[in-house]
Length: 294
Image (cartoon, rainbow, N blue to C red; front, top):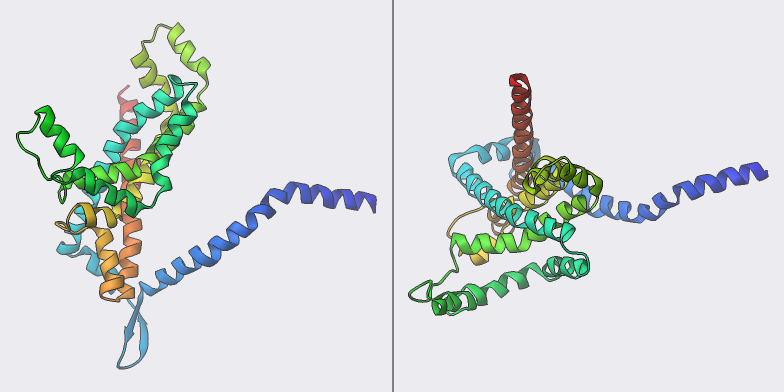
């Protein structure tokens, strides 16, 4: 009996972390995965009001490959790509600086990076209105410095969209890269220096390859949601271009077409993922060719 109680206690102590996670998993299943599954089913269902019947169809996915839809997908892809590239170019040096150059105030600077994401996205977008308008801080500062001859209206342009996108998604690029850089064994960097490698060679041959998991995570966290973003292009871009996120919103809210909206939603997931899969295989093929040449 005592042995059995000890065994039960051992199992309970071993599975205790899982028991604490169960409520969160149940919440996700009930309010995320099940609704997404229902939405996925709607994308294949065609309802005929006169006959009051349902039928299986790929019609809503076929419409995505029409020229008009492909143009919108291209707009979203380019915006997401530019947002990801600019975020990476800013985030990696910052993450490197926070990891290797700052010790005393590192937590404070990390808090400054995360602070914008603690506020509502709509508040962040509207805050940029006061900065990017013709008599805003940015325009007047450039005018007073003498860079521009007269105040300019930056709002409702591609530049304003990029500024808003990078600003809102920038923390999602910094944090994964910083988390991986912080775990790098400093002895590897010292060994590279002892072998005569310069700082740039150490970054290129040691630090960047070791930080690649964080870079890949950051690319995913920025590119995929940026592809389906609708609020920032809508408010800061002035609706001059259509993006895939705007298509999804209009299908659900304006046309009340749940089937087409569901198909557009899942296509918004699949296109970025397919892009990364193709990029992964492309890089893998290049590496194999390089090894073959060597």
